[in-house]
Image: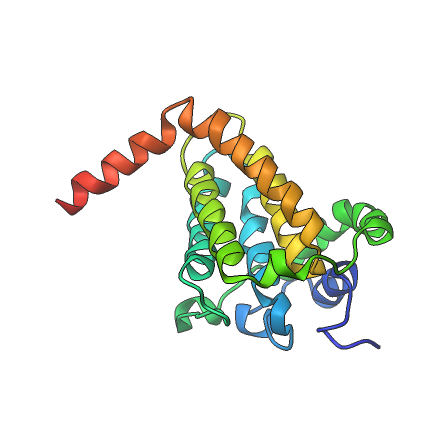
Length: 205
């Protein structure tokens, strides 16, 4: 069996799904042994709540988690920081099992075209900060009550997570472009980001 550092995303997901559906998976355990791929797994798990088919719930839970991941990349952390109340919590295995049922065929196809490449896009400090900035903005948009967008942002964030997990700089470039497009369409044009920023500034002053 390959180590967690060498395993494909599909293999990591299968390992997470194997076991008692009632078990709760801890963030601390899910992130262990992943080295440079650790932020990908962190983002992957943070994105899961966005697929909850209840209006308002997925974004309210997943949005802040995605922002939390993005901020750590934006300030240049090489290893994720997890407060204990987050490290000891995580998704129930049953949720991961449902997720695996849907995504396993897609991950199998992804393995045929995705591979480690363009490491500079993944590891350069400026590139990492840019990825973090985009994740923060996308996390804000996910958290806002913009109708019919949860799945759109969830799929997009999943692309970021997979790019980081598979160490695929080319896929990350595609995710950057899609992220900028989503921010332009749903954020700037709708005024959602500006409204959120104004609200946050007013609370601080």
